[in-house]
Length: 509
Image (cartoon, rainbow, N blue to C red; front, top):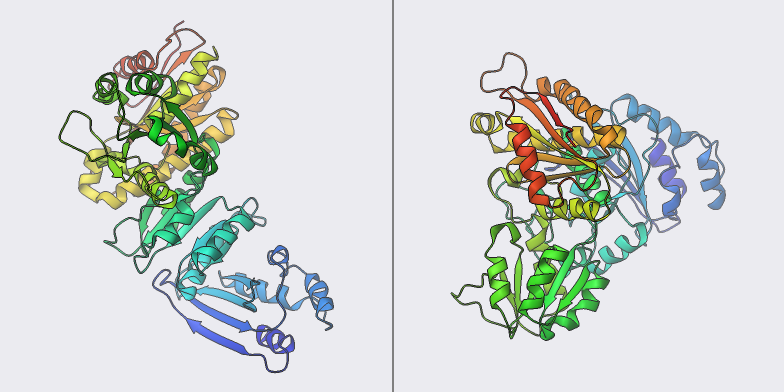
């Protein structure tokens, strides 16, 4: 009643008030109510605080209407008392919309942490407004600040520029694969993108991680937290441009957020591969002196995605992952690169991980070695994971990985503090870097934290394999290993010292 009264009060003569009550595919456990009017709009900066007590007085003063400023605050108390969410949408010439969502009978979503959401917002995008509103209700319930965009690619680009989101959630119900729409996202290599799709929908090129709808809130929350952590710790992606024909791509790649490096021929590209550890290699179709580069790329440990520019792939010894014409539009190239790099070409259990991969980890380790900076390198193994996934399914495995990653990240943030790094590499479920003096406590806290969530992953008494955790770490006080492969070998040796779940720390100097 209060929302309708406000809508009628602030809608000018000839304006419209629309009320909708609906349910959605995205959040089938919620009923939503929308009250929209074509009156004056609310500035974006005020949307997060108009439900505070007496805040409405200021808003009403702008609209030459009186009031106590308690109406919206009372509305919020009523909705939240029923485990629901309430918020306002306004601006961009679309009027003002108040929305509240209530759980169906028997449903009681978990409440967000105490206090208002802080930090940079999440941007939820899609083409169905009602579905987007339902997604926003879920995300608010998980404790996030959220803005939405259901417009054109141009509107999306303007929205990204205006609010600087920490993450984009793409609600892709209709398989939107337009190059223009995805090109906006691909052009921001530093912006993580989570896709939400109906079961069986192919993954979009400009998406880092995909979850099927309806997404379990706990899994959705964990994936968002891990993707945000990934953004915080990762450096800019590196692109090595080999040959004069691709050197001109350096500036536009830099503008898109990449670090671009060049090499004159195959021999120089081979040398720079080892020094730079790039994330992607762009090859001139007319590149000369290829033999040294081919030899390095055929070494699996040095494997890096390759894009051939202006050439035709053949059955020769040089393996490429994609080919584009020499006059490729920059938007198309960025989209292709995002598709190659977003999921880091992982398969099998590796595809469950959403953290920085082996190349980012190796680059981080080598930077600390070059700086003669002491560090501890640890591996976290979930023993029995293969068997548990075979018994409970791939989606359970995905949920387990992301929730464990969230737990490990929380420990690193609290105990590891500055310069802590969390990643994933083949044969290890998680890997981390911390300061040597924090290593022992980090390892102990990871084991304790996993012990608290393990009964939630596999309830007591449930049939099938169970999980145990092992944390293995080696400490390099400086100049102990010198090269990344020696460090990995040391971790493997330490891991082999016991067949029991344990914390194993090699602190020998």
